[in-house]
Length: 167
Image (cartoon, rainbow, N blue to C red; front, side, top):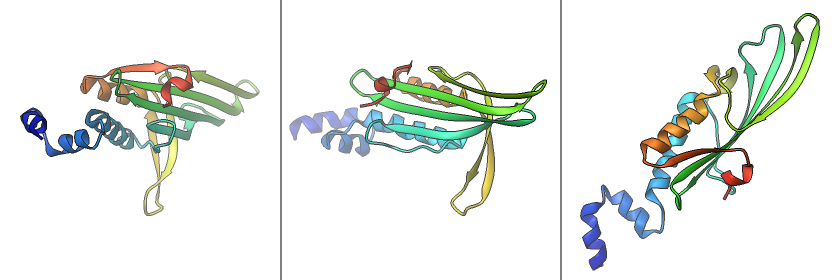
């Protein structure tokens, strides 16, 4: 108890003390909470999983695609490693589409690593079941995560090996 009392003036709040006493990592929890809130503001739905801190798996439509349909499947894993104070982020985009460009065209492609800035759209449902459309730049997702990590004094790394963003 004597040690805890000496630490109290160094702590910002009782929340930090509870995290320390319960074996949790206050800074990791704070960063993950900010990332979650930041991605929600972008309209991104995500979940926490057993294998990583935050997981995103969603489908978008390419906002620039003219006649036809181009789908973009976006997958991301975000892992905040408290040992080296680094947020690791894995991203994969898979594009499928068909349309007209001097005749009929169909294509499939995928990308690992940094997501290029690509304008996309998605239809989402709110808690009442109302449909709304979001429009964003896919590059805003890693940009948001990176800014939050760095604003909290942590490093940020994009990884191309999915395992590096898992526990």
